[in-house]
Image (cartoon, rainbow, N blue to C red; front, side, top):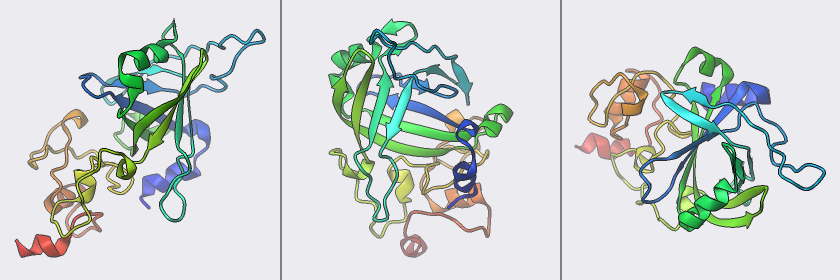
Length: 240
């Protein structure tokens, strides 16, 4: 477990920030949401009408995230690596538009096959502008409930999604985490501020940061002689 993982588990809820990126198939611009600083945003008033809670937009690592009431459940891994019916519930009121998420569902096939990336960082890192975060990846399996108050989606882990990933746990010198698009995710564990493109060239922005999946990419980020969470087969790498 990385140091950031340990810190996130020890912090109070208010000290952990979550940012959500939803990438819809065939749509060039991802949807960016946050629900930080909000509580009880998916409820109704005494008349059964949506309880409207407006939150501020947040700028994080060069991108602007719009406030949305969001609730997740069932995302914790069990001992055998499985999860229990993961779900994402999103308020149907976003930026003053009632029924905003329902409208997106009508336009884009209920957001089926959309990729959901959840970034976890600390309030301290956010305030200091540090690129320190962990990542979870999910896929929207189907819309399970659509009401005036909120829309709920069933989620799949990448390995279970019907877009079957390239088999990665084979004798291969390319990192499995990079293949799966999980660079800077929990298994990768990299949360540093050294940025490189996928060719190993230094870049000055996290927006350009990408891992080429080679062992050398790990070394450049974690350091020579350090323990590496390399997700490839070093035996295959040494044969080259």
